Image 1 (tube, rainbow, N blue to C red):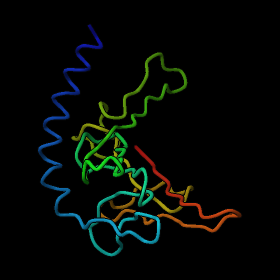
Image 2 (tube, rainbow, N blue to C red; image 1 turned 30 degrees about the vertical axis):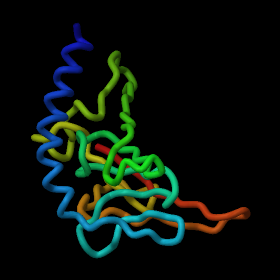
Image 3 (tube, helix red, strand yellow; image 1 turned 180 degrees about the vertical axis):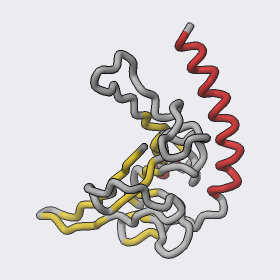
Amino acid sequence: MRQLLLSLFLLIITFSDAQQSLSNWKRLTPPDTVGTWIQPVQGKPAMPVWGHANGIIVGLAPLPGPRGLIRIYTPYLNYGFPEVMNFIAFEPIPRGAEERGYSELEKSSLDKDEWGKRFWSSDDAAAVLPLNEQYPARGIVEKIADGKSFTIHCMQR
């Protein structure tokens, strides 16, 4: 019964959030393709997406879907951007708790009136203060022995 109620609750949240985010994300600047990497543009409100130009792309809200989930895009399936293929949810069990948390169902400690934990990006793994979601981090491309590495840090509260 609890699972059914959670499913119905998520469906309601998803529908209302999807309507709002459909209008908001369209105003954001599409990402840059720099070599083999897809990265948010800098200096203006941008779509928070990162990935490989010929592979998987990950994204955060306000792209379509509920807050508190990481979006997975698979452009090689020719669905067209911004078609989400799947989501990654975070379900931590805090020390001392008996029940699992639900990143998409809980209220954010930063946005008391909004459902879904707020995720933000950073180029620094030690960043603890939330950055402006409208200006996502670009990510760090580094040369490694056999090629290149792309790193982006995602935090949530």
